[in-house]
Image (spheres, rainbow, N blue to C red):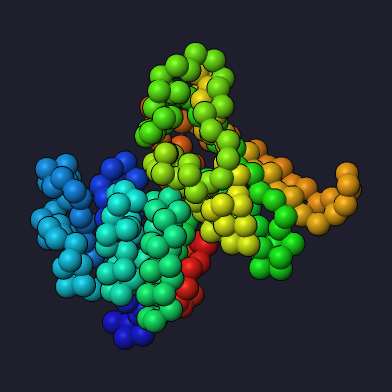
Length: 279
């Protein structure tokens, strides 16, 4: 018996869609992790897939399961309603960072974290180069950031005036180009990558980072283009452009490689203390 063995980190999973199911199976099998609870808005979806001992019926009772990390993979509304409780209870990883486009939610979580020992973790997901961009923001050398997401029309879940624009798509079409803050409200399930960008690029924020959403019926991948602008003058300035192509079946919101990235973020989401952290 190893008396010095590190106790397993207890993970609470909020949301049981494709990503929630994936995380449940991975956490259950991981030697250093264990499931604290699983919650889903509709319990019928969970029963049969998750043993009763793991089921949490009321998020207000999350503290009773003694989680070390609560992972939200449900909906931005859950972050707005329960985020403060989660941060008070444990470290909190936000799978729907579009919720942070609401300035009041971001402020509330930041202040709650600062008053506790728990951190708020934002997974990079499909956002390539997040740490480098955050370092540039820390130094004040980040001058511009544009994130373009291109997907098959069936991969979008949109609201507001973008619903009609999407219905009219027959060829490659730019649905939106402008500040990320407005787009987070119009496409809360699709632009978490852009929300992560706005958190990393904190000197620009949700109003200073540009988001561009493109629907292309010819695509069988999710494509994320990131354009970074730094110091310089005229035509001679620091510039980085990356293109990430991630295979995805028609109608799927999250590409295959993003699942693995999310799990890596979960494993990295601890020990950084209070505040907002990119992981």
